[in-house]
Length: 262
Image (cartoon, rainbow, N blue to C red; front, top):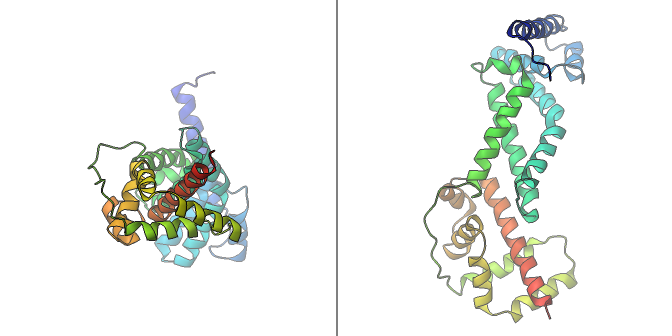
């Protein structure tokens, strides 16, 4: 690979800035029909869209700002969703968790991108959108790994005693989690739950990863709401719901496999 001299690199950067400035200066009148057609074109550089977002924000045009932001999100959606799935798959996240975590990772990235685009103190988005996006990807990925317990500092231990009364609601949650299952499948799972010992279910819960175990104990043992659990664990409500769904699915699949063994 040929390395460019510093002067050549500077020339390329300056040329890029001039090209982006010319595109912006030749845009049709702000908020006109031609203006929106130009911004919606797939050839419109994302850097120019970032500048237009900040222009709309400065004008107090929230509707226009949101419209441009929607264009940016749509333009970056496919690549960002593919990145979220790819990176989680290649760091060893269990397949049962990947889908929910990929949704969370993509949503977090969109949120960070939106806040960055609304911050006029971050002008580099108007100069090199892709580099800024790569930086945000690294940041949100690391934050998600810490939040989900895949890269965390040692935390406090969760108690091991689970009252028997709490498992009735847990069993019902497991049964109801698979919304697409047929009646016969639900009946089979009910039979599985009736056939296992209570201690077996307790052992399965306690064997879950810490982030799942803590959540189940708080919801089904301490009868906490999702919002309370989100505050206690330092995560979003959406993360609590996704984590709960993943935990219940893991328990459901484990119970069915356990019963199916000869």
